[in-house]
Length: 459
Image (cartoon, rainbow, N blue to C red; front, side, top):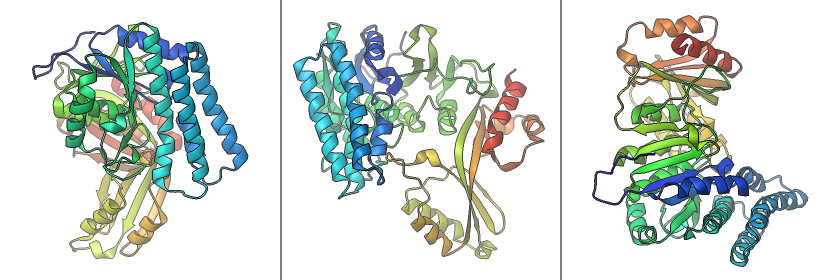
């Protein structure tokens, strides 16, 4: 692979991120280590927890877990780590580090019986990445290359909003320069995705899927040339191949297109990943760690090909919030009050449509915090109900047609609506961005609609 030189005069640096399936076991880690070592510019590796571990940890945080089930979950997590350790030959220092984390994991899970704080939950949820980073670093050393694991909490500074912490960009840049940059000349550094720490040193998490975001934030802080996101699919496709058999891989897309795709459901990329890359114009590569020879998708600031239709994205498990109030009629301040309420509850609105006395908003349930807790709390609904009537609709899916010049190209709506003529569309949004047209449909019809749109627009 070739990389574009960064705009500042620094040595080429690539940050590689590997997801849970890529570090699921020893064989997977070994394959990923070969990918790292094949490119001398790759000096920083960011890893998720081994596949399945985070789900087990999330279950450990639940209030209904009894002692018997807790012990079963802890044993399952330990077995995943020990299976990799056994393949490594159980080096004493690595085994001791893993045992220490597993012991801490047990203590934290017990403490949740008395203290169900999100701070404790975040520390427990972080242990999966702590284990995988230690083990992956050992695999690289086994292949003859100097490598060390690094506790990302030393540099990835966040606020104290446990479960969905917000990164502090300037602090991360300063800390990464002080503590992480000097190590990269001597070692391939392996660190954790998904986790950080607040100013008091308390462990925080960035929300589910936050490892991609972590890699991009560190790349931004270190002025990296590129970020590689290694997952279990060979890049980004025109849509999910499981929904449309003729979906095809995309060789190159722009930051704007990728941001829309990530936001509206392309699961190979966390929505926030694009933001740090855009700020520093860092190109992003998405490829399969199981088949790196297949190549993947490059996401760049500028691309040569900008088709009207690039992809169809699907995001399931959507919630539609309908707010009705006669106070809206020829009045001012209703929307301001509504959005202020949502902001206090840390909720971001996706799509919005309005009429004289109604506002409809879509909320993405996949934006739940790290412990899996949802967005629509009782306190939020009660607060909204004080100034309007609230109706919640669930079991919906958001379908986004991604491309270029969508708002200014004649005939697009007629092509899309022709496909949708036999389906009940709950919401339509188009015009705010030249890169998307969105529709909300029943989740039960989503797969059929995506396949039909793909056939019409791409086949």
